[in-house]
Image 1 (tube, rainbow, N blue to C red):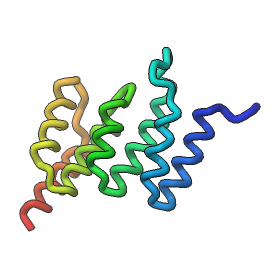
Image 2 (cartoon, rainbow, N blue to C red):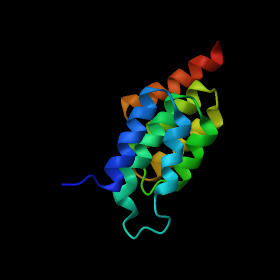
Image 3 (cartoon, helix red, strand yellow):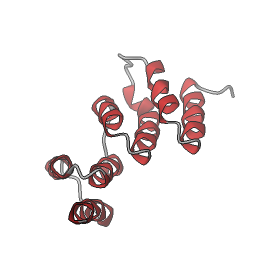
Length: 124
C-alpha cells in the first residue's frame, strides 16, 4: 500500500543518520501531531531521531527529544547514558541510571558498559 507518514519520516531520518545530519533528523519531529491520540505509534521515529542525536554527540538536542518521547525503554536509556558518559556528564548519566532502576527496568551489560565508559573518560 501507500507509504504512511511514519514510514516517510523514518526514511528521512535513516538517510540523515547515514549523512551524520542530525538537524534534518531532528526536524522530522516537527511533523508529529502534538496531541496524537496514539502517540505510541510515533515511538519508532523518536527512537531513530534520539539515536542520531546521540551518535553525533548532541546532548541538548537528544535531551529535548528524550523529553518528548511517548515511551522510554532500556534501549533509549542506554543511548542517553552512553551519550552522557561520552560527554563526561556523569551526574546526568547516574540520574538516568537511577531513574531506569526506579521504573523497574533491568540494567544490562550495555548499561554498565555505558556507565563505565563514562567513568573511564573522566579518568583520562
